[in-house]
Image 1 (cartoon, helix red, strand yellow):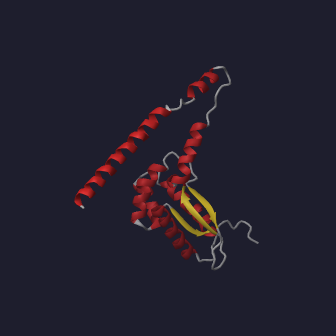
Image 2 (image 1 turned 90 degrees about the horizontal axis):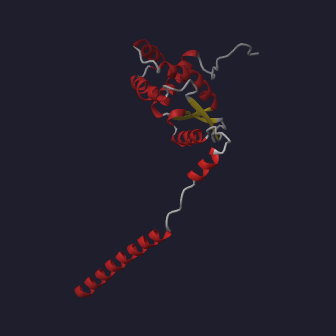
Image 3 (image 1 turned 30 degrees about the vertical axis):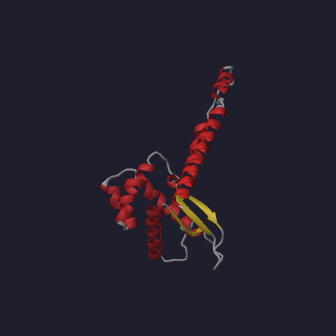
Length: 185
């Protein structure tokens, strides 16, 4: 029975587990996204999130506490510099775990763990969706807003004239090149 056993041991001794999680956290901070097994990713999230929370308050005390966990000066610089600026307004939930297909060799469950604020794929879509989703009244002023928001189509004649002019210039250069070749021959 495992009643009350809350720590994920990952089949390692305490010192090996601490070194593993420290290295994984340093790599996550450096590369913003790493691929590992699902069990390690879940253990890493519990280990890394309090460390990232410490980086929000840049004091010597917090730097020393984080250094006692990571033992990597470059990771500390990155964490208290770039990452702390991005996560300053986020109240937790700094990482995201995405499940991947099983590993071919041993069929281990694989996952990608990444820092949420550094993902370019999901970040922009989420901001656009959040910006569009606003509460509006159902009064008559809403009818005016929809008519004003409709874009007017661009005149087609202007576009066609531009295309014709571009074709004429290419024809003129082709003719000049042909005459030069005939003169040289």
